[in-house]
Image: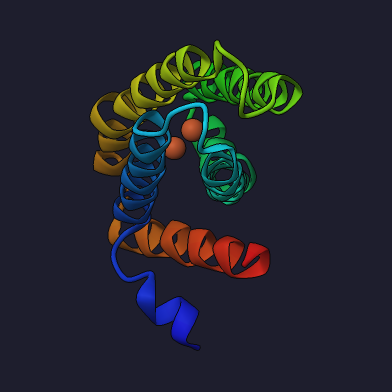
Amino acid sequence: MQGLESAAGDWDEILTAEHDMALAIFDKMLATDETQTFKRKMLFMKLCHALDKHAHAEEMVVYPALREANEAADADNFESEHGYIKTFIYELSEMGPDAPTWLEKVREFRQLVAEHARMEEEEVFPKFKRDMDEEQNAHITSLVNRDGFWMA
Ligand SMILES: [Fe+2]
Ligand SMILES: [Fe+2]
């Protein structure tokens, strides 16, 4: 059960660590040039996998729990932004790693993800967590861990 143990911490700490990981992949992508198409492809695949796993945990666990806690507007807004994240993935894969506008597109994409992550980390998740009791916090954490485990 190595996978479960390595994901230690509360649900919000796990999600924050995943945000940081995704942003670090973006930074590596932004440090490439148009001759490094293989590296760009590998980093893009890694990014897609990381974002997919992360979005799954939020959409299957955290956002439904937010709606249950009467924070449906935030959950709906986040879910809509996940749709635009998928749109960037679609556009980048259509464009290909040697396109002259690739870096510009990745930069715009990073900005959306960074702002989305900041809203979750600084505005919505802390407020949500403050209203939880210990038991609920532990429950959401175990669901997020289990969701990550299914997707791994
Ligand atoms: Fe999200
Ligand atoms: Fe997130």
